[in-house]
Image (tube, helix red, strand yellow):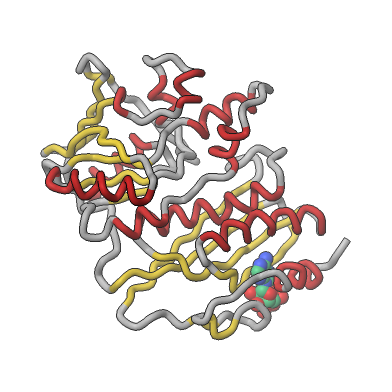
Length: 315
Ligand code: ADP
Ligand code: MG
């Protein structure tokens, strides 16, 4: 068992740096040098045990996911990840748990060249808050308030895998590693987000569920959306587990770290090229229309009335 400073040393000994980190872990604050001509994008997300991940989730998956959800927000802004901090609350000082958690965190950090430059370590219910910073060429960040009437609506990847894996876990059933990783080890769409500058109008990450998050795009942009529920992209695993008609409910339940964005129909060719070059599936799920609100239609073009869909903490 270790004290607070031993725990911090265990983390500090393992982090890798970057040339733009003037001073990393060890002082009262980190010193970072953003590139000239760029805007800094700052995001924060917390994972609480039992709320954002099941209590029995493996420590390495918890570490991975804490960073992944933040990288997904940076991706949605079109930002290139650079630095992050980790505020960690642990019920007891547990070296084995901490080392595994940091394994997961740093494995994803290495993939995206983001440096862990500070944080806080306290005793309390298991909780991780990550603040991540990235940058974009000045004035080029993607916003959720930029959708235009006539835009296509696109989503990346497949939707509903995490919700299915969670359902199986809560019902005590096992599922394939591939499916479980969609819940525990989401892959933030950083390269896609960075490539969407100049192509997409509005962009959002759909961690709270595609319909709810698209609703935020509509509200912020002062437009409406029409979505084909049968067009929501599904993995083979989801298709095998869930019948067509109700599939959209799992696909809009949240915890999918994919991007939803809008773009002029003239950009379809550019997006096909991007999808190939990044090897990320991109699917057109509807259109932005005038007025406000979201309307959803089934495979026969019949309107499906949406009540609440997606995840809301105090809902
Ligand atoms: P202070 O008392 O000045 O807040 P701390 O003792 O909390 O300093 O932290 C010492 C150093 O270790 C600081 O640089 C801080 O950013 C870093 N640090 C603390 N906890 C973590 C953590 N969980 N992950 C990364 N760095 C951390
Ligand atoms: Mg501190």
